[in-house]
Image 1: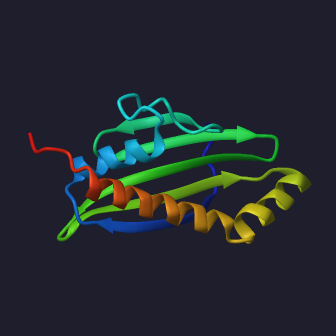
Image 2: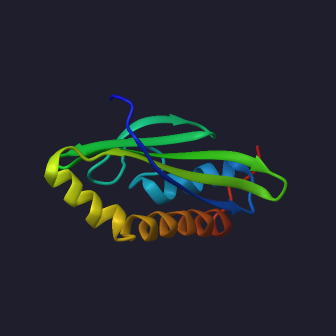
Length: 129
């Protein structure tokens, strides 16, 4: 997939280690957390580099897009950043971008995903190995 234009990044710091947070990302984004390819409709798995990067990609008539979760250690836990990259070709793409990005709906959905990841990490920590 070609390099897409950067749209935005939203992040949250999860008070858990990176292994626990990685598994929380999988529990949130995959229908089967043991199989990273079981991502939501409209996406396919691009990369799953445990415990650093989980990237999804997709396309439809109005857009080509990529959603990337980047996990990094902080002094207080793990920072999870969700980056969106997307292209909206043509006139219909511009309208779709206005509806999805311009309306603020995308921001709400991504922040809700990040909040859910944090909740998952806190409710079901991964045992230390």
